[in-house]
Length: 172
Image (cartoon, rainbow, N blue to C red; front, side, top):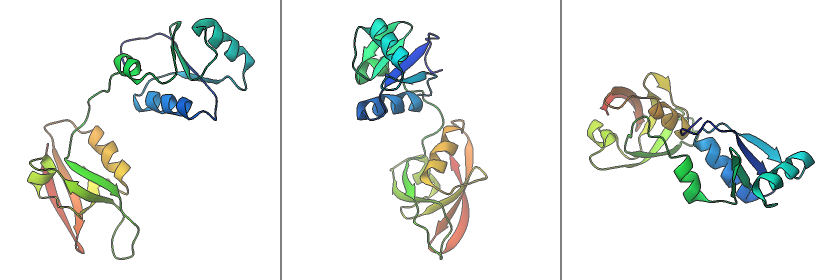
C-alpha cells in the first residue's frame, strides 16, 4: 500500500458515476490497496457508507473511519503522494501504428533537450523496439520498463530509424 497509513481503505461508488471512476483510477495509479463497494447494488455497503461518512453521495472514500466525499484531489495527493521511481528518459512516446515495413514499438514524438535520450542520440521519429533487453511493443512498455530501472544505470536500447535497426546505450 502506498503511503504510511495501514488503515482499512474502502471506496464507495456507483458504476455509472464518472467521478467515482476518477477516484478509483487515482487510487490504482498510486498503487493503493483498497476495497470497492457499489452502493447501487449493495444495501449493506450503502448503510455503512452513510454511517461512517454522514453522507449519501458518491464517491466516498473511507480511510480508517474517516471519510473523503467527492473528488478532493488536494486531500488525496496529501494522503497518497506520488512515488518517484524509475528513470526519466526525456522522450514523449506513443504507440506506433502497425505497418508492414517496420516492427512494432513506441514512436518517439518528442525528445527533451539535454535529457538522457537527447544525449544518447534518440531522435524524433525513432521507434523504440527494445529497452533493457525487453521487447517494446507500445508506449506503455517504455513507461513500465523505465519505472523499474535504477537511476544511474546504463540502459541498452534498440531503435528503428528509417528502415535500419541499431543499438545505443542510454545513461540515466
